[in-house]
Amino acid sequence: LSSHKKAFRELPARIRRRLHVYWTPTNSSWLNLVESYFATLQRTALHNTHYRTVQEIEQGLHRGTEYLNENPRVYKWKKV
Image (cartoon, rainbow, N blue to C red; front, side):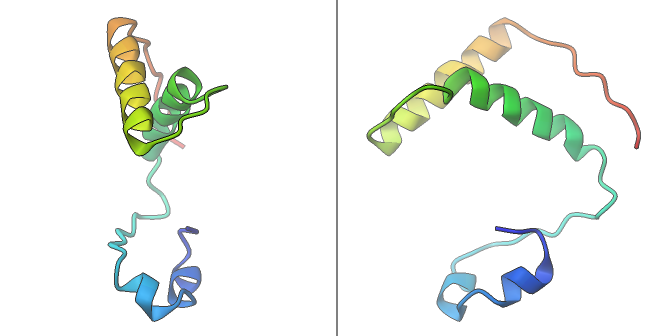
């Protein structure tokens, strides 16, 4: 889902009622750290995999998170 409010308004009402959208400021550079973490988690847990169930995805993400916790990496934050 695009973070643009117009795109959200254009969704059918039945879908909008089921979503909880939290708008973040457009200048939230602190999210860069979150994006870096999730990109690393995706490469660690989801790259070149084929999960058949939601439970398998959850297990893969759990293993990926455990791996990242056991092998910490320093993220260098830069104010943009």
